[in-house]
Image (tube, rainbow, N blue to C red; front, top):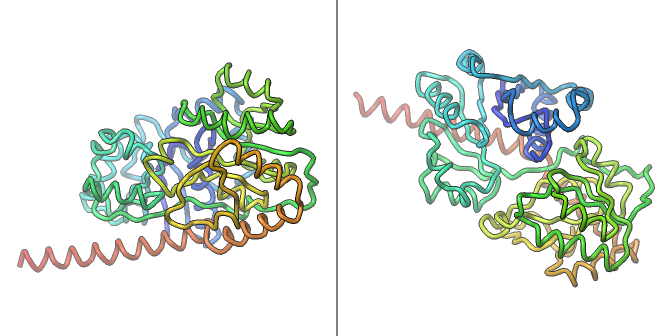
Length: 376
């Protein structure tokens, strides 16, 4: 089958976590002998910022790290209809320009033979409902929502014909333990600043515990303002900026523990949806301690796969326990790996995607049959 993904960017993961998941899904499709192509705008903000910060080297790194992936850039004169006509499945990410979202839908309505899905991996459905409600999704066969709470938001609002929960996951071809690397530092956090969506949380669950415990710690990420960088430095955290996602597994391996700090809009408006970095960290076999979020879908086993810290004081206690007890740390690693490998890899998500495609095809065929019978 020929899959066509409209994404904000496949090439750039600069402040763009969906690229991680999309790369894993496409790699799995290619491994199953399907064709997978990603279309991305030539002037997208993630790609533009990555080029401005790192230059063409970053694009070359992507091609070296993911030689099997096929990204294609488009501009205003791009012939989308010609590309769509050759596809069996078209998946459009919610960062796609609204006019293009509608244009692709019209192509489906005008006799397109492909299955058309809309993919939402953001909190705008609850934080900026007017932006999502304005999208023309009536010709889309279904919506892929990256959590049950988001799926329910679409259903309540009447957006889309059918809505399916499709969580993110780890590409375990890339995200895996590296036992050959000896951990030489205590803690690493890989996360972006987040538009003040977790400013207080970064202070409480990262900066203050590291300072109080005197840990050796490193931060990777982008968009940190000068006051935040000053706070990191004052607490003894080394800030090392953007990191290519392909380098993350070995960085995890060089540290003894990591933390997960979800953004406030997800925690409050979309319970049950962790960041993709949580899947990836557990897949790499590093003990993880998370700031609060509600695992209402029971994706993991709290206290077994990872630890929840309800506040900064408990974060300090958990960090001390993990760093002081290698056997306890190893038990978290073993359990976390077990859960990822049994439930949360991109192989699992591609299996789920094919189930969604089967349901959409079956339902679409039934609708066509009913329409023909009514017309007769």
